[in-house]
Length: 134
Length: 135
Image (cartoon, rainbow over all chains, first blue to last red; front, side, top):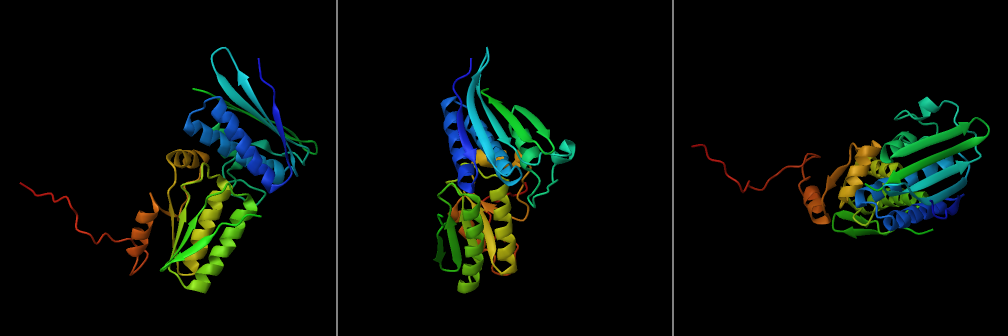
C-alpha cells in the first residue's frame, strides 16, 4: 500500500527550491542513505527545473511507496507544455534546447532506480521516478 | 530575493553559500562576483559550498561560469568544501566541473591561491616531508 501523496506546484524558481526541500524531508523519513538522498534530491531538482523551464510550469507529486521487500519514494513531475518531440535525442547527454548543459534528463535518469517518461507533442510531459532503499 | 554575501579578505574574495539557492540567486552571485573582482582588483576567489547538500547541473554550470569569468578578470577561483555525497552525485550526473579548481576546505583553498604567485600552475614549494632514500 502507498501512503498519501504530497503535491507542490512548480511555477517559480522558489517552487523548485520547495520541491528539493520536500523530497529531502521524505527521503530522510524513508531512511534513504545519505548518498541516495543526495542523488534523489539532485534528480528532483533537475526534473523540477525542466518542468518549469521547458514545460512552462506544472506540478510535482511525492509519495512514499512500499513493495514486499522495501520502502522508497516515487516522484511524478507533470506539465502541460509542448512535450518532447524526440525522446531519444532528449535523453542524450549534452543535448539541450534550453541553453543548459543537456544533463538534466539523462543525468537524472542515472541517479534513480526507475525512470519513466510519458510525453506527447502538444500535450505535455509526465516523468515518474522511483528511488528504493537499499 | 536573498543574496549571497561576498567578503573581501586581503587579496581574496570569500563566498560561503549558506542557503538553498534559487536559480536567480545563483545568477546574481555570478554578477556580484564579477563586479567585486573588478572593483577590488583581487586575484583569488574562494567559494565555500560545504553547506550545500546538493549541487545540480544549474549550480554546477554557474560555478564553472564564475571560474571562467574570474579567469578572464585575472582572478583564480577555488571551490572548497564539497561534501562526499555531492561529489559522487555530480560525477554520476555527468558533471565533472572541468576548469574548476577544488580544495577540501577554505584553508587549503587559500594555500592553493597563495602558491599561484607566478602563473596559474600550483607549485609545491614546501619540502617533501617524506624523504625516500635509495639503499
